[in-house]
Image (cartoon, rainbow, N blue to C red; front, side, top):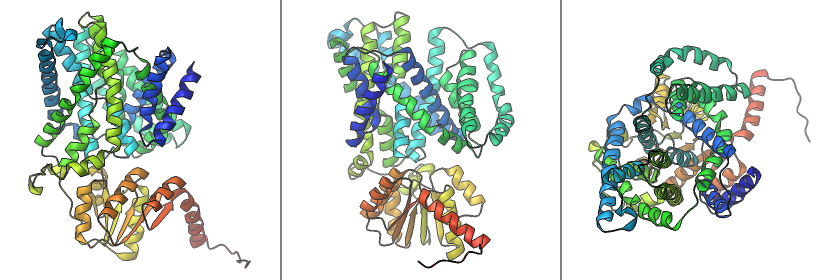
Length: 530
C-alpha cells in the first residue's frame, strides 16, 4: 500500500512543482485524494512522519541561536499572541453561539476556550519547510518566526503536561545536566568524519539522546530533538551535520504531509465547521502583524513573518485529540480541526510563494517607522564607500572576499544574514555586516549609494540569489553581477534574469583544482599544440 502512497505523492507533487507551487501542496492534495478513495494512514506512514518531524526540529536546533529566544520581542510576542488569539477566537466562537449557529449551540465556555487555544498555534513543520524552500531561514523575518514557533512548542509542552495530569518524572531534572555533555559530544563530532558515520551520529543525537531521552522522562520528544540540536549548534560542523540530513529528512516529511491529508474522513458537518474556522484565520494574521509592528519591526519583516505563521498547527489536532479522550470536545470538532489545519496549509502555501510580491504591493500603502525608531535588530544598512559587495559569507563568499581583497585592497564588503557569523567574520579581520540580501528595502538603500560596481551573489540557495538579482535589476543597477549555482537549471534561470556571469560551483571546483596544482607544483609537462 505504501507504494501507492509514494507514487501518488510523486505525481501530484511534481504537478504542483510545475505549477510553481510548493511541492508540499501536492503532497497534501495527494493525501486528500487517497482519502477520498478510501485509503487511510498506516502505522508505517505515521512512524516515518514522526521521524521526519523529529529530524526537522533537530536540524533547526543546529541553526538556532539560543540568545534569540531570550529577546523580549520573541518570548513576549509569542506570549501576547497566544493569550490574545485565544481570547479573540473564543470571543468570535461565543458570538457565533449567541447568533444561534447550531454547531456551537451546545458548547460550554470552557470548550470554546479550548478550541480557541488550539487555533492559536502555528505549524512549526509547515513554516520551517516554507522557509527552507525559499532559502530564508536566516532572514530576519525567518529567525523571528522560528523564535515564536519554539516558544509555542514550549507552551505546548506545558499544556500537555497539565492536561494529561502526568508530571515529568523526577529524574527529568537530570536534563539540566545535558550541557555538561557538550565537550564529549563535540569531540565525537570532531572524529565523525564527513560520510555515513556523520549522518548516523546526527540521527543518534536526534532520535536517541533527544527524542528518546525526553520521552523516557515524560517530556515531549520533539522538544528534546530541538534542544539537543541547539546544544550542538556552536560546533563548526553543525551546518555540515544539518546538510547531511537534508535529503533524508525531506523524504520523511513527505510522509508527514501525506498523513495530514489521510488523517480524517471529511463529513458535511465537519466541513462546515472547518469553513467557519478558516474564516477566522485572517484575524490570527492581523494579530501577528499588530504584535510585530508593536515590536517596531519593519513592514517587510512584520508582513513576511505574518505570512509564514498564517496557518493553523497540527498541534491543534493534538489538543483536539487529548480533549476528545478526556470528554471535553465532541468528535465532530476533531474532524473539523483536522480539515481546517489541512486547508490552512493549502491556503498559506501559495500566499508564501508570492510573499515578496505581496509585500512590494502592500509597502506602497503600509506606513514604515522612521529609521532611528526601528527595532535595533531590524535597521537598514549603510555600505559606506565599498565598491564590491559579496552576499553570503559562507565558504565560497569568504574565499571570494579574501581573493578580491588581495587584488583590490579594502574596497570589499560582505553581507551575512546571521549576526553571529558576521561577528566571527569581523573578528577575522573582514568588513562584514549583518543584513537580509532578499530585502527590497535593503537593495533600495544599497543601490541608491551608486558606489558599488560589482556584486557577487554567493548565497547557497539559488532562489535567494534569483530574488536578489530581481531586486537589483528592478533598481537599474549599472555594475556587474555574478552568482554561484549548483545545477544547470539554476544557471539557465539566472541567465534568463540577465546576470553577467554564473559559476557552477561543481564545474569550477575541477578547473580551480587544476589551476592550483599547476601554480604550486609546476609540473614538468610540455604542452602539445593540436
